Image 1 (cartoon, rainbow, N blue to C red):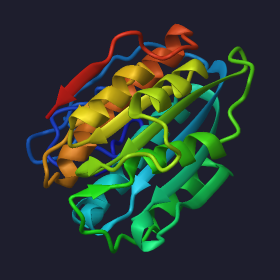
Image 2: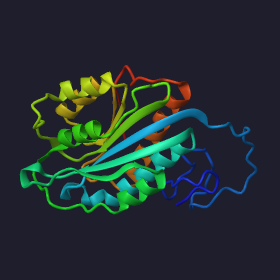
Image 3: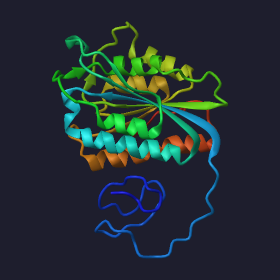
Length: 251
């Protein structure tokens, strides 16, 4: 459902909106009470370059709706904080079956990216491991990140299932993570945590948000609210580098 206060999507039957704190009845309706809010603050004079990598294999088909809702929550939350948001959306498939990465949104608007995610087709795959690190590397290398961190801040989120196969480029998970970290890009993994993905996240100075092997749309919506809160808090604090300590959250 949609929050009547900030217009972001929130999980059904939520007690409060994870973005603005608006209260709801247990049945999902808005609480009939007077809410006193602080005066709205102007948006921060900073641009956010936001890239998303999505596992489009058949493994992700079961939470397609959750990914769509998650992207909308995260993107709209960033829009509410930053003066400008530019979005890239990439999906990856099974390279062993010649399912190459696809760029769905290139330097697009938030609305365009949200719509493009809804158009992704999930199919194929089926192996126990997927080419997640290759997809992340592709999203990282094809996004033209701004070299001046005082002008724009970058964040990369990946929605993944199962473990990852080794990188075809020959880099280790740690090497890729360190490369991304050196560029000052914030990294967020929404995934089933594995040792290799943990190694990558730690090297990138990023955060892992653990999901179950059959995540529901509501579960992913809660995780995405946490991701959005982390990104907007970092933007608000004026940080231009990834978090120094890897954090993990499970729902």
